[in-house]
Length: 308
Image 1 (cartoon, helix red, strand yellow):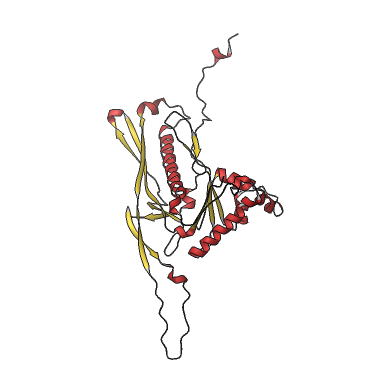
Image 2 (cartoon, rainbow, N blue to C red):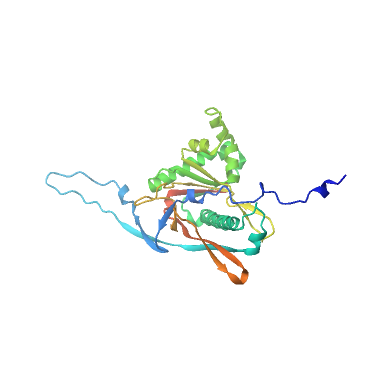
């Protein structure tokens, strides 16, 4: 009787394959996209004169007191981010049906640019000099300590109060990495507050309600920090939490901690083009985008560092 190996020739499965693509990225939620036409330009920044309480009483026959408001400007400068790879004719001809060289290449290039966008945002967040509003937790206050002294609710309340007093805006979002999120959702102060009001497990929606915020954004993204062919994955964000006001609908006279200025943002954030190179007998696929993450109002954010 023939052996199994003699009656079957191994070939690639057509209904399953394994690929590691970026997951859990939050850059565009934390920093809303503002579509722009030019690679650099100016935008107006209003002063806080509108928050002044002036003398409004007018005596009989007197003129009204004058109220003055002021403007300044700031700028953005986009940078182009692009990657390419070649899909050869031989690769296409020899590919099994489970492998789509052009589609797989396009998705891989786009995913790598998305990772760059995530890293760029967290580079801004993790640069302590960017934040006038910041607190660094001591060894007894770190949220991973899981004590009453390290209660995350207390620190988030202080952060939202600071944002309101410096900008007049009500904080609506907290941004953190998965390691900090794990410490928050397992913290006894959080669990004790929720267990009496909900039978659901502790998730971002419930914690957002507890913090009196709209959203808890947890970055689950990871990056491979070593050369091609090797693996060493690390989180983009680890031991910090940024409490912010995020404007969901960017427009005139609307502050926000961040905006992402992007050419063709929103409807066409990424450009994909292909071009032939006959010497290589293949088609180059190039993915590109132009953007800049910008802190447009640092008063709309409060950074809590050393959370673990």
